Length: 302
Image: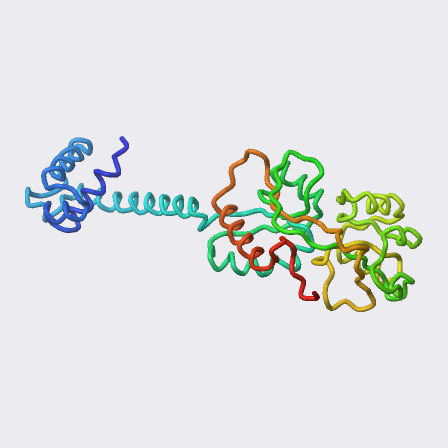
């Protein structure tokens, strides 16, 4: 027979306090209600739990039940506390995917703030390009993505900020010696390396450059290494270009209006876990402190 936890809680309170009045005060019930609960428990157990009506001494059966009841109540209370903590986003596991530039430049600060507020949440972070982020969200491999605006997919996109696009080329390239901003059509005359960023772009001039590229590299570290080695130029958002790189030039593009939008990607019509909601609150707060009134990322190089 399964005993009601409320009856066990009443019994433990009376057994530990030694009388009905104090037991009733502990559980917030009237003495008469406590007496009725004890009678119901005795009927279910099939034997007396106290030596007398004074309730100050347990029978052997009562002592056995007390130990069992304490264990059950402790287990139940811990389980409920865990459920409540999960509901508040205080514990859990969050699987997250983001583009490399966000992973290297934004995520360290965001994670530091998030783990400070939610120390019980475990994070699983994947560093992949926008197309891979979308696939991971659709397959349920990750719950939340931070990336550029996807072209297709059963996902929703919430824009947070935009990041300017720049030409990145070797210092030895003729492009690096030009004064002023670079026209995209001038890049066509030089070796170009396509990337996840250029592949995801809907800017016609960048799409054309992408179609002419003989080399596609999706990992930013490898991409920048190849640029530095003189194998070609590429186009990257400001966040993706480290400030301390040597052997590489970062040049403005013509008119300076080329940019990449960055935002939150999640599966359409799917509820987020409490941990994911908490993370996005922290992430959006972190971003809002670092963009200008036009929604542009404020680079320290500006």
